Image 1 (cartoon, rainbow, N blue to C red):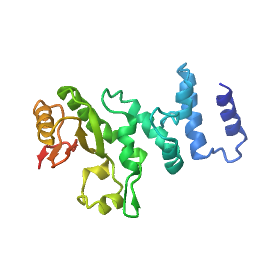
Image 2 (image 1 turned 90 degrees about the vertical axis):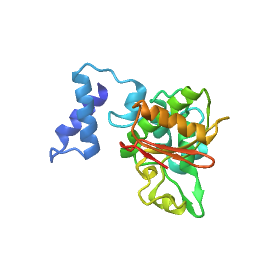
Image 3 (image 1 turned 45 degrees about the horizontal axis):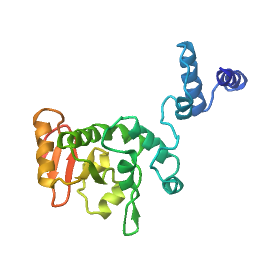
Image 4 (image 1 turned 120 degrees about the horizontal axis):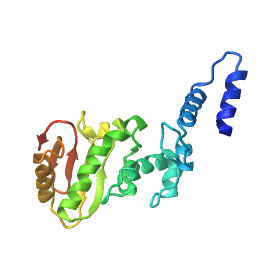
Length: 211
């Protein structure tokens, strides 16, 4: 409530009657929460009403945060919030620190974060279906520059943060692809399933495709 009062004071003493964009959004969000009688937790206050917490997440190296900033923790907390049983935030974030030549991959823009959720949930379900743990997520989001560097397709769903290349412990790519297609046949998702010699690509593009 103290922060809400400060926001009101700012508004009263702003001669132009206009707060900066961030301050205005935060003031209105806190006011709405107060009006509704909502008490924000410390994590929610840290995240803001329109973001994600930057609270440290187990398994995420400090070196990653030094390289790419607190968005690393924010994205990790987003993944953690999906409550996946077989995929850790570290597995999802690791591909974003890969390099090809002089090109370094990046985190996806925050506007794309939610687009990865359906694909991760399918990968998680596949692990449960097979009773096999995920060994590695080889590729998730790719920045356009990084996608070009690894010779990805010009319209790759990796650039839209909707695709995952994955390997499971003790399961051949052929079997992994067949399980993905089985779940797709059961209408668990609509998307692409790509079989490669050492991994399987899964995406949730909204229509079916195989290769």
